[in-house]
Image (cartoon, rainbow, N blue to C red; front, side, top):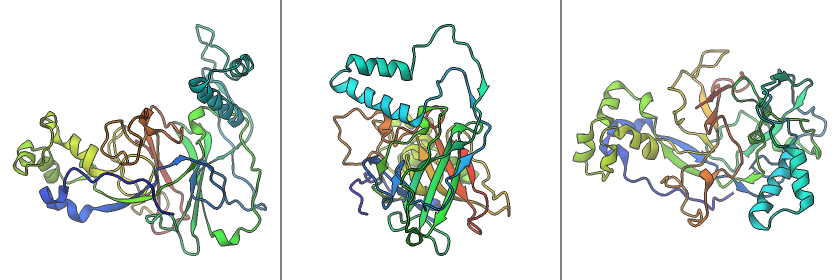
Length: 342
């Protein structure tokens, strides 16, 4: 699969100014998900999975708690609501559509009663990502596998959806499950990814400044070093040049495989395998946004005259706009994976 989206070159070669960063470089594959009609044979976000017809579909047994504010919408309700939203921006809604929309999401009555209540029953998990190794250069698959499938429970556990990973050989799947079960309800509509095809692109990344040595952090924070190198960095960053480094030179935003995590909601924390204590590898970043309107990471080909709303093509929202990072054990991928929100 060839990418039709390309990241602009970084403002300058950061290793020319800080050569200590060179050995810390990692590649990451930006996925650049964009709306499409993926098939089970495609790498996708939120698309149909190449799932064996004779293999049970994963379910989550809970706990599942509704907060009393957000209605418990089904995936079908959310898809219909999204169609209504799109129609309202272009042609307006018919009276019948307006009534249907109000049935899906009735007007709130104030004051709102916070009736926290458990949602009973097992919840079918939703497809999040399907990635073929042929499409994603940084996807390191276990031996005799070439396909990663990620699903999640569309309820917080406790602050983000709980994910499950499946590694398989695509060639062994001959009879595909065509109508997988769906959950009767979801906690948030942002936990239903819109079907997207991916446009993979490999880029080079460097660690967040908080993951660097104290000595290198001090150098990154020294504005005179940046000035002496004639980097052209805006003087607005003079007090905190590390912010420019993190935002524009370190790790790419958006959905990606491998690379370095971008920290924000939390400081870096050890990512150790809960089974063998090995340092875990970054596997997949599930992102709310691909970047702000003025981000230099936005692909060249993105239409400049369209409102980006953060380039949230997948409709996924993690927390208040964060990322969910999945990590795997490099020694044994079958060990439980780890999740962080940042």
